[in-house]
Image 1: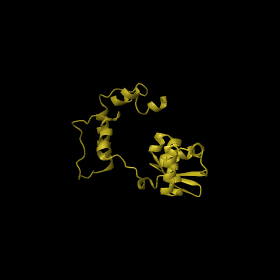
Image 2: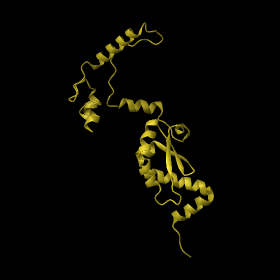
Image 3: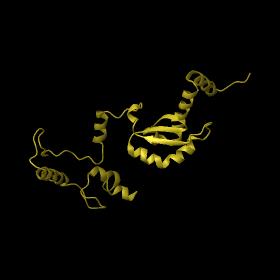
Image 4: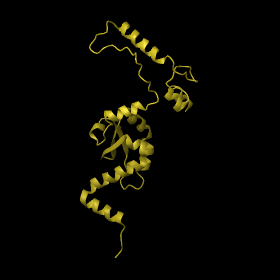
Length: 185
């Protein structure tokens, strides 16, 4: 009598309990995380395989578009060791809300915003239009907005790259403003 590893025994039990298709899907989900890596896995969820095409939900349309360019590389990694190869992948943000992913709640978003490098402390004399009042015209609304932006930028340090007023958090993090930082990358 040969001894089997615990992993082999658990895999056989899962195949019997779940059914062959569900077990294959579970294996696909596990191999998906390995094939794409943790960052992409955080923004994607494999949904189903239909006629050799894997449908994947993405957190946004931008992720879907970017991953379409990567799908051949992902397919190569995903099909390693599979009995039935996946022919193609379709990415769509349509079913993201139906997947089991939860977005950060408002409290978490507020904490993230408090620590954001582009955040400026609120000005005490920030004159905002009271809620419920109607702006008399578009030019008046624009003038108030421009004055508020100009008041906020007074006293901010200048970006060494472009010379624009820059929040101190951006300079601490990147040594330049958020618009100049990607140019350096």
